[in-house]
Amino acid sequence: MTERLLIGLDAGTTAIKGILLNESGRILVNTSVEYVLEYPGPDLCEVNPDVYWKSAVEVIHRLITQSKCNPKNINALAFSSQGGTLICIDKDGKPLRNALVWLDNRSTDEAEILKKTFGEKAVLEITGQPEIIPIWTATKILWLKRHEKSLFKKVHKFQLVEDHLVYRLTGKFLTNPSMVTSTLYFNILQHNWWPDMTGFLGIDQNKLPEIIKSGQVAGKLTIEAARETGLDKSTLIVSGTYDHAAGAIGAGNIRAGLVSETTGTALAMCVTLDKPLLSKKLNLPCHCHAVDGKYYLLPYGQTAGMVLRWFRDEFCGEELQVASRDNKNAYELMTSLAEKVPPGSDGLVMLPHLMGAGSPEFDVRAKGVFAGFTPRMSKGNFIRAIMEAVASMVKKNLDPMINFGVKLSEIRALGGGSESDLWNHIKADITGIPYVTTHSSEAACLGAAILAGSGSKVFTSIEDGCTRIVRLNKKYIPDPANKEAYQKMYQKYIELYDLMKGWWQENSKNENRNTKKT
Image (cartoon, rainbow, N blue to C red; front, side):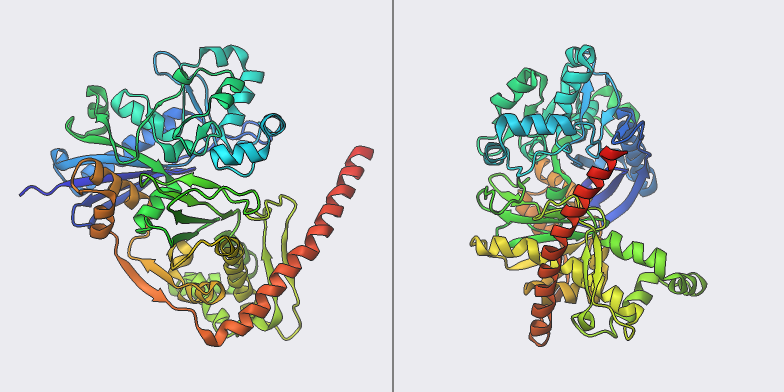
């Protein structure tokens, strides 16, 4: 029997990653193509939409050539994708301008306009987003309407990155609920466009893609797309999902009670729910899952693994030299130092907010803090304190959900942080919830490939795909012996933020006064 193959592509902020997977779950090839973002001015972040397309084409070429597979054996392809990034195309399907990347903050004033017009409570209850900030697509569309009026009138379709790539492959204007939860003009309860918001933005709903489910066939390749990519024209293009939801699928996080937690540069969690949880008191983003009928909460922090990398680069020169000389991993050398320090880091407490705090504080003024160090402390104390701080950030997001009655049974660990046994143990001990690692480090690509398999009937469903493909690795059970030490440490973590919050606010006021004087 001919082996059936699947492609999962992850269109991230600075790279497109891809895997070629067989139906038994073996990754035959994985590769990636990086691209450079443009920063034409303060708060501006753009990229030519053709960069996304050319990068995707290059990744597909590599998957085919490196695997030496017959393209006719590739049944389907699906995307995982960043959210928020806006692409505007004309009636001929050509981009009218550079994409406004989700990182672009030019629409700060527009976010305030939407906040005053609709109110945060209404926006949360309809779109699932507790904060109206420039990340979201609606603010960018309003900016175009106000500042690039002639171009705004020429827009035939407003697209997100996955929408654009699916269009380039199939010629069809399609999207899915998981992707457009990041726009502020999608009703996550009714799964349709929010007419009040689209009306205020001044866009007809026919300027938006058709909504289909994640895992549903979007179409077949156009002749031109088959020629450019090297794929066979029979390959199905399947509707994908937001990258966080793709990572959740790639970790098997598809039922209530499971959490997937990624400690990469930043921190992101997906908490799967059977129904939406929309509360300003909880103050967490709620998104449509790629699994039909499911939702997930999306707590996040701007800096997580980035904090450890910063400490490595600034203070671990000796470890970097040894790692280079002996062909070792500097993080493993750092971890060996942290392992010598007891839980609670001898009283050293750290706040990991190097670029502001994400959920649940949403405090842009927050900064990183070490508190309580003494001459008796070593480098290992600081390294362990960083690990404990990120784990505390996880707990601070999960505890309010638990108080709301959300039952959490297990956390699936993803990202670079999941490769550290010590860090996984610390997180399990501090949260009180078992941590489990998976065999694949490319969870988002794997999730996209599972959607491709579900849509093309290689798998009977997304659930079937997860059962057959996702493989769990180590499990870390909370250690009762460390419970008391971590309870004391976590209470200090909470108190430290509360104390510093007032200082940051006052300092910010003083800076504003000084700026006005000068």
